[in-house]
Image: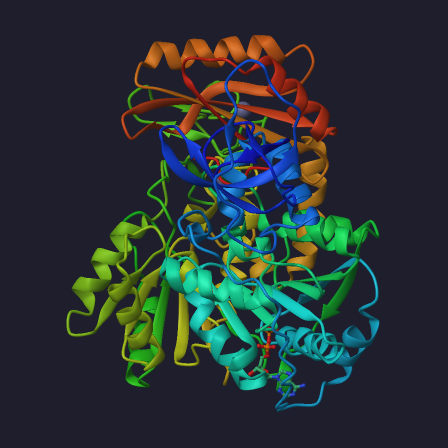
Length: 640
Ligand code: ADP
Ligand code: ZN
Ligand code: ZN
């Protein structure tokens, strides 16, 4: 008799033991009795007989081959350990849903397609050639292509993909969520035949998603383009992994398992000894730092193709009563007259209770944590959402001495209302990742946008992602301070990246323009925006992060406690802090910036560490059993 540990796609830490007369290959699907039903699980390991409970037999082994190989298995295990999560949930993310729903055999036989037909449109320019020739295709290495918007990054990695395909190997291209996918498909199917292309993203039906996953696994298709979860696709015989727009936050999953697809891609590429290509016009500080340290290879593309200049940027001051100054309105009118689209960038959530100096744009930050302080009207003070410190409101600005301190700048909501009043006859649409868009609604807006039928588009991060919306003639950043007046140590990085990426949408075909509205022309970030110099910002920001022991110098783990009972939430958070504070460097507990969410009261603790696996191991051991809900977010990106 053989015994096997079988894993199910559920929130459990370990598998269950079953017996079988025949030997089963690790990674195979099996049909077994589980909790009174028949279920599909995956054989995870050999096991020895257990005497604690009755062992049930495997009922069927439907497929001829395993669905998961040794490397993917190792990856799943690593993710569960690294991100302090359930291995069953990682397995659930790693395989299409259908794998666990279909009881009959899945045909996994290889089907090698040989069809290769590249239709190139351009020859690489000198800058591109240098990058292309210096990416080592023969072994593992992370290549960061840091190039301004429209500098031809896509063209470079497509050239590498050609080489990989010619060698009979496959390629995986990770792209940010949703918005871009149709455009990517377009670009790739023009270049490579659509017969060898598989697409995987969350807007596909489970059936379609499964089909595409299967075709790629079997080798029927040779290129997989997909969002986050595509990082779990079959990596056998793969030659390169590309992570486009590597700074995009959608690579990090915001619910369990909270993995980062970019890091998983690197982990897997290492196992397979193949190169990774990361691309961005605004790489993350983490990636840039690794490149500067020689861990990644840095490539710069400093010029736009055809030397179309980067858009000129107008800095426009606003104040509390003037959300859309005349200058902005005139520019919008001009753009509309030319039948071009105006894009207005607003912040994502209505979290903007910051305090700002009206004269110099100084934003009040916590001296301990270097994050934006939150203004509390009721108590008329400033609070830190990371260390719980509270501060009196100073009577004058510490930077310039002005007494003109405002409790916020211009709000995006107000800008939106004002636009609708000022341009009532124009077609105004709002486009958000957060606003719940149905598939139909989403396609309607994207369709309208591509046809150039929207006059004014109000949006958040979405705007920074549209690939080539050449109809955008003007981009307006409604309120610069509102973008970075949030309690997040990456607030400045995120804000600047967003502004630069969005500005890059403007005038890709011909010069476009950008207006950045700000409280003061002396406000932070302005100088980098004017010169489009993201690298200077990164260098400067590195110093701040070092000073306060933030990433990339330390890694962080965010522990979130949630309870319907306010006191219990706080007590649990305090208890956890006491358990770990002697051994780990922590901030908090403090109320989360979004304190009440779905009827639960939330506290968080931030752990900073240079030995992540040691820290997660310790947390796992000490914080295992709590009645209240405790979430762990390793390498968190969002702090609400
Ligand atoms: P990025 O990814 O850096 O934003 P893309 O690769 O999308 O830039 O290139 C921008 C545009 O320039 C695309 O329309 C692309 O087809 C075109 N392009 C890229 N490389 C070249 C080249 N060497 N010569 C002419 N056009 C190019
Ligand atoms: Zn000031
Ligand atoms: Zn603080």
